[in-house]
Image (cartoon, rainbow, N blue to C red; front, side):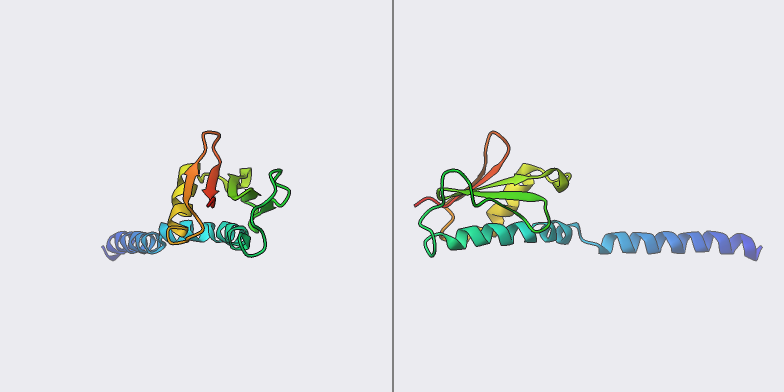
Length: 127
């Protein structure tokens, strides 16, 4: 009789442990963390505007990959173009746009963040 009771109790405890572990890992933390490398790269280009450069060249010669290799950031004039690479996986451009908008909401150099029809995201820093 004891053996019949022990097995279901162990199964219930095991399921409770799995549920508690899976709910304790926040998806929001993972999403925010996945953009840190991108934010560092875009911050670099935006911070250089008006301090080192008035604007970047029109050919995108200074383009740079984020340190995690998931995005290519290309400064052109006073606009920063962000393109995801294949390694970015399931991140959509609309998610990328939302993340960049929330990151630059209080930055006086950034006028707008929007998704282009071609799929890339543009950070507009024009005066």
